[in-house]
Length: 484
Ligand code: GLN
Image 1: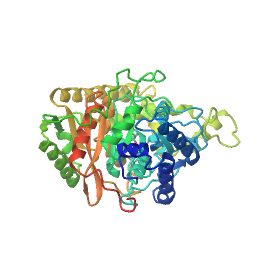
Image 2 (image 1 turned 120 degrees about the vertical axis):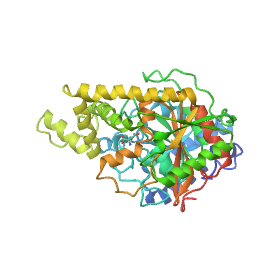
Image 3 (image 1 turned 30 degrees about the vertical axis):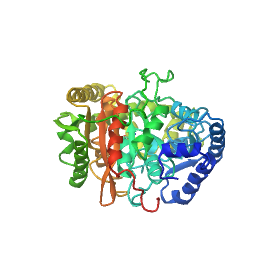
Image 4 (image 1 turned 135 degrees about the vertical axis):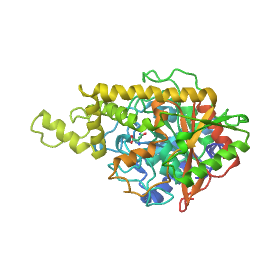
């Protein structure tokens, strides 16, 4: 059952080949047996999942089922879930139970999806390897000695290992696309504002966006159909009509103009990863697409700009965790200042502390103009590069990451080398554009991701372009050994 598409699962649930309770038990059994190898879940919600599955079975019986009714999914532990712990990968929120569901959670539950549990992640979504989690690292299902990518590493590993039919993720600088690439699954980060951020714990509010991690573009389309849309509780939510993503999957892509930015194929890209991406692009040419060489001249500035903007916003967002309102509180504080200092020093791990310090520094009176303001100006130049490119092309393609999954521990002592992992994904967030990653030919048995970037609100086109490739290739179908 775990290798079937969401469309197949939905059809078989309707035919009563099995019930949603049976399907849910099947995934819960797989999690119990296989997740000790991965650590992809922080919290399991077996009882509420089975109760939701029973309600789904009732809905199916009475003919009220939609495409996600009874389908078992998982949420990244950054989304608030009423009655189920939400830790955000941090000790700070070790015992936090939100009094409400995030909009994304609410919408998927209303669509009948069954929530199996909450997936592991880098602490407050800061990381590219899932090693900053207070709940321990996650292993890559393709090779347990390697990282799954981050920050949505738990969701990526859980989907790749077939421990859930799909999962939510969030992407501030690459956290859906990079782990999707390293775990060999399909991930989509929609346009900024496409999915509500309400109830999604904030890291860098002008960059954060929720999206889907799934086994295929078609599966992702079913989930995004239910997640996307305007929400008046999120002031940056986009009031733009949501097309039917599933309906657009089979559109013809003859004549599609694919831009290849020269900056994405230069120094730093592993040659074999580059060759695998090229092979996928040749498939697109066989499908009738045209290749256009383009340039995104400010690409090299995206990582430095991001590491000013994201920490600045993080230092402001994380100020709420002060030991007073909610979250971790130190024992026996001497006075208020001691309470703040020790609660934050104990509750936050080293990467979060580093970001808060950088952010506070770049926002401080003497440095604001030199760093933060300058970074915002370059951010506009990066967005302008894309705007010019989209005058000539329909989508932009390139690698999602410069290499395949690296070894656990390989980059933990070198933050800059860790940050460079997101060199191809970050610019998309700075511009607010949608991007996706789909698996292409592996290198030495390890997954490689092809990144597809679209113009604003062109998620339907991205999913369509991805689906057409998945229709004629098998790269998205193989399961990691031991997780078939
Ligand atoms: N890896 C990047 C970071 O550490 C992006 C994280 C993300 O997208 N949440 O900030």
